[in-house]
Each structure stands twice: as C-alpha cells, then as structure tokens.
Length: 219
Image 1: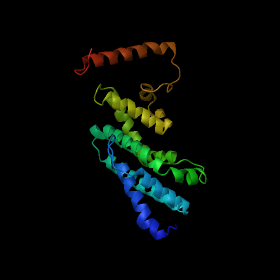
Image 2: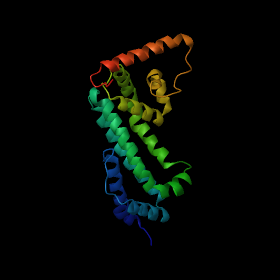
Image 3: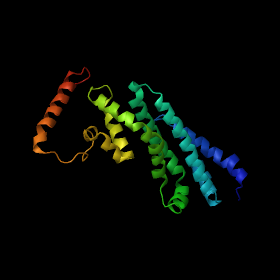
Image 4: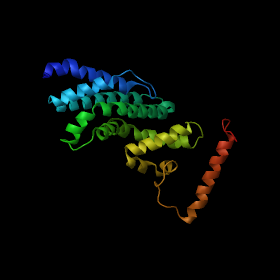
C-alpha cells in the first residue's frame, strides 16, 4: 500500500495531530480514550512509506506552537498563582510525553536515533526548556525563595517536586539559587565546614518552630 502526500496530510497526520493535542492539554491524572494501537499504526505506516522527516517536522512544529502559547499564558499569571501554574504546566507536559513518545517510538528508532543520532524524549524535554523554562525560571525561582521563607504559602509537596523537576530539566538551574535547591536535593552545595554547622542547626530549629506553630501541623 502506498501513501501519497495527500493521504498523509488529510488522513494520517490529522489523526496524530488530534491525539497529540489531547495529550498536551489533559490534566495530570486524567484519562483520555485514545487508541494507542491505532496511533502507533499510523506512525508505523508513515515511517515505512518514507514520511519520517515530515512526521518528525510536524510533531516538533505542533509541540513548539503549544509551548509558545503556554509560555504566553504563564506570563499573564498573578504572582500568587505563578508557582502552582508553572508546576501544573510542567506536570502536564511530562505526562503528555509519557503518551507521545511511545506513540512515535517507531519513528524514534528508525529516524531520530538512526539518522539524527538523538532521542525523541530528550528532544521534546529540551523544547520545554527552550520555550518555557528558560523564559520563566528567572522569575519563578525568586518567588520560590520567598515562598520557602513563608511556611505553607506553597504546599511543601509542590515545592519539593517542582525543585526536583526543574533540576531534572536542566541541572544548571540550581546555580541560580544553590541554597534553595540544596534544601530539597543532595549534592548541590560543597561539603559544609565545621563553622557552618551552627547556622544549619539554627535553620533546622526555625523550621521546626514554624511547623509546630502552623494550624495544619499534627504533633
């Protein structure tokens, strides 16, 4: 069976485009009724019929456009919601990649890895860094520093996971505020000297006092 350019543009790509859009916009934890077998079959046929380059280009174009819109939406967020909205966006995108990368696995193996000497998952994460994280991290991290000094202004779970996920995206981000990242990740700071121990002990005591005074704290 042959696939013409018209077949690709009017049948195969629209199916994949719709599935990708659903994955990119669903809330973390939600389920959408996508036939992964059908989507994988579309990718397989396109790759076998020499549409790998076009498929790869269209995929990156669609995801880039989505991330550019997302970045603009984040810019309009109130500072109080900025951290949680960024956290939501990163989780949403990470979940989406968990569906998109497997759908395009055949293209990844026989085009991205074989010809481009790259990896689709790595490239799609890098798109988030380029179009979203790099543009917002300099605003997000100072807000997180401020929030970390106000217990429970942001959920501790959100803070911890966001720091870990930002660091996983690009470890160099830790250099912007090493002390903040060191609260949640090991190995960020050089080994402490003896004269610094008292400072760390006092910080730990202050955190305990803050927690014990919070109405939601259970002793």
